[in-house]
Structure formats: C-alpha cells, structure tokens
Amino acid sequence: MSSGILWFKNDLRLDDNPALVAAAGQVDRLICVYCIDAHFEQSSDYGGAARVGPHRSGFIAQALIDLDQQLADRQQTLLTVRGEPEEVLPRIAAFIEASAVWAEIERAPDEAAQLGRVSARLPAGCALVTTEDNTLYRLADLPYDDLADVPATFTRFRKTIESTIDNRVPVAAPETLPGAAELSTLVSELALESVDVGPWLPANPRFSGGERAGQARLAHYLFDTDAIADYKQTRNGLLGDDYSSKFSPWLASGCLSARRIAEQVRLYEARQTANQSTYWLVFELRWREFFHWTLARVDAELFSRGGIIGRDDRPTATDGPTIAAWQAGRTGMPFVDANMKELAATGYMSNRGRQNVASFFARDLAQDWRWGAAWFESQLVDYDVASNWCNWATVAGVGTDKRDNGFNVLSQAKRYDAKAEYVLYWLPELEAVPAKWRHTPWLADADTLAAIGYPRLAHIPRDWGNHLPD
Ligand SMILES: Cc1cc2nc3c(=O)[nH]c(=O)nc-3n(C[C@H](O)[C@H](O)[C@H](O)COP(=O)(O)OP(=O)(O)OC[C@H]3O[C@@H](n4cnc5c(N)ncnc54)[C@H](O)[C@@H]3O)c2cc1C
Image (tube, rainbow, N blue to C red):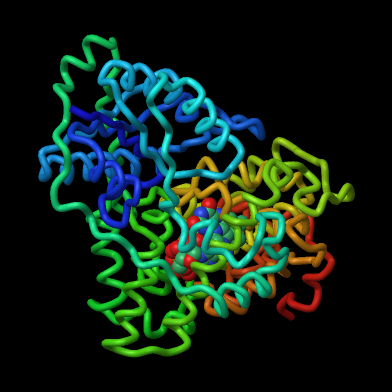
C-alpha cells in the first residue's frame, strides 16, 4: 500500500488545490496535516505584537474546522498538530512509509526556508513535492526567462502578462480521496499533540473563515448581487460590505483560489456583463500577483529599512507613544483614527484606508515603516506577506521605484469621506464637533475636544494648509 502526506498551509480548500489533486491520484493512503508552528506564538521584531493576532487566528480556526468537515464528507480527516513541520512531518512520513509529502510552494524567505528544512529531514525514499496553489500563474507560465527579469513596475508586469498568458484553468476538488490511516494510533505512537482550535473561534467575526464561506462570498459578489458590475465606481468606498469584493481574507488563507475567482469573473462576463469593473477586479488580482513575484525576485531585501530600492534616507524613528497612538486610533487625525479603530475591531480596512494610514505613519509621523507593516501583520485578518510588505514599502517610498507615493491625508479624507460619515461611524464622539471641523477637530475649541476626550493633533503636516476649512 502506498502512503503520502498532504501538508496544508495557506491553501485551506479542496477546490483548485493542485497539491490535493496530485496526492489523491498517487497514493492509497493519505494523511492530511496542518501544523500550528512556533510562528503562531511569536511576537514581532518590530514592537512585539503577536505575529498572528486574534482576527487571523480566529479566521484560520474556522477555516480548519470547515476543511475538516469537507474532508469528512470524503471519509478523510484533518490532523491539526502543534509543532514545527520539520519535526512532525518526517516522523509521520517514516511511520507510514510515505513516498511523498505534497505541499504548496511558498516563496517568502521564512516560508521557503521552512520548506527547505522539511525537505532535508524527510526519510530516504520520501520526497517533498511542491505545487503552485495560490497565484494566478505558475512560475513556468511567466513570460520571463528568470525571476530576476520580473519587471520592476506594475504597468510593465501587467502589460506583458495580459498580452502573453492566459489565466490558468482551476481544477475541481477530487470527488473521492484515498483513505486515512488510523489517526489515533498515529497520534499516540508518535506522541503528537493534536490541537482543538475551538477556543480560538471568534465571538462575532466580520468574516467567517472557511472555503464554503469564501465560495458564498464569491457567489454573492458576482451572480447574487451583481455588485462586481459597479466595482470600479465603488472600490474606493469606506463603509459597507459590497463597495469592494472582500475576497482578501479567503485569498490570504487559501480558502478561495485566485484562479477560481478569475474563472468566475470570466463566466460572469460571458453570462451577465463585461465592463470596466469586471476587468478591474482581475486587474487588482494582478497587483496581488505582481507583489508575489516581486517578493520572489527581491527576497529578504524587502524587509530592510531601505526596502527594495535600498534607500538610506528613510525615517529611523520608532517613538513608542507616537506609534501607540497610531495603533490605538488616537492620533487626533480622524480619518486615520477611524481606520485604525476599524482595523482593531474587525481585522479589515479598505484599500483607501490602508494607503492613508500607512502614508500618515511613514511620512507625516516619520516612523520606520516596518513597525507599521508589522502592526498590520498582527492585526489584519487578510494578512499576506507579499501584499502587505510590498504595499507598505511602496507607500513608504522604498518599493520598486523612488516615487513619492505618499498621500495628503486631509485632502483624501475630504474627497473620500466628504460628509464625514465614515469618521463619525468609528468616532461617534465627533458628533459634538461642528460639522465643518469633523475632519479637522483640532480647529474646534479646546473645551469641546476635552469634553469628548478626543486628542488634539500634535503636528499638522505642511502640505495640509490648502485643505483646511476657512
Ligand atoms: C499598506 C497596505 C497593506 C496591505 N496589506 C495587505 C495584506 O496584508 N493582504 C492583502 O490581501 N492585501 C493587502 N493590501 C492590499 C489591499 O488593500 C487589499 O487587498 C484590499 O483592500 C482587500 O479588500 P478587497 O478584497 O475587498 O479588495 P478588492 O478591491 O475587491 O480587490 C480584489 C482583490 O485584489 C487584490 N488586491 C487589491 N488591491 C491590492 C493591492 N494594492 N495589493 C495587492 N493585492 C491587491 C486582493 O487580493 C483583493 O482581495 C494592502 C494595501 C496597503 C496599501
């Protein structure tokens, strides 16, 4: 009897999961494993926040439970164990005499190093087989000879991609799977610590983890509501569920496949309507793709203060009270504070919000951008290593080019939240401030601010002058 292991990571789904399809076709007995490794308990090097905060651990817990239920429908089980994959997987492999461990490839430095450690420690006769699960394209699809040739600008990347390659066709979930081993024997013989993720489940999450919830969101945004047909007009919204797709939490944990989304958009275009909005959703997925391949190209350089471009003139400050006020939504700039409150409460923030709070942090507060990026890593339910760190680097002016990608946050607030509805939603105390000053409450009298307990902005950026109310 041939045996193998399927190591689930950021691909918590059955649909369009090439590792699962490959494993299912090749062995008679399959062990499906997810490892709760040390990274779940680590704190960040930049300020000490948990690297996996409660929004993400809660979402992952839901996703693991959903995956286990779906596997159960196919007479399979997910074994969730605490431990480093390089410790756990080789022992299981030796015990069941596995011929292979199948897993998605990951290209970020820590994740790639982990794959290397697993591969090195597998017993003789057992290979680590990686598949490309979480991107629209595989490395071999790209029209470049080498990763080093991935263009440094999104526009060049997108144009070469759009003109040369077709989206990959997603693969359906296997109807049946090879049987599992006697897991209780395996767990006790190998003294594995199996984990009940129940205690991680969030009380009132904004997003429900799991493949089935992700599929439901995909159907909702496309065929159920046609919200996608207006995406280009609504995507800069701040309040509500449907101004943007909200696919990101499911994409980040791999509950949804980017290829499946692209395929469904194409189907929607064929059946309903094809317009600039339907194009734009896939355009945004190509940003995700660009950052994935950019991280693969630049590797650890991305995480240095000088970033991809290697600048040495970026702020070095890491002022504790300044950073704490930004994290808590207590800077005195309502547009920033409202977004930071939303992040803390839900684990999500709109793209418009992310750009502005990042710009405020790196440019106006002049702090080391990596501390802001690490706070996002801890808080975001949709944290994705490439998307987060590349976007932060771009806003901080250390991405792939030297352009000033910073924002005039006051002008943005007035443009995208013209009636101050968003800031009032998250900072209801601003009701007490006259309407014309809700984006600039430091202009109100000191007594009003003191009465509502809202902080006075410490420093007004010079380029806000033209945007102040009369
Ligand atoms: C400072 C900063 C940090 C960010 N960190 C993350 C992160 O950790 N994880 C993450 O998924 N996105 C991140 N983004 C990108 C973007 O803000 C989110 O993907 C988007 O807001 C998620 O909401 P949505 O799914 O409704 O997006 P939609 O607007 O509906 O877009 C559809 C999909 O396209 C992709 N996408 C859209 N914009 C971007 C972008 N700028 N970069 C990469 N992919 C994009 C996402 O996968 C998204 O789900 C960050 C952006 C900034 C400015």
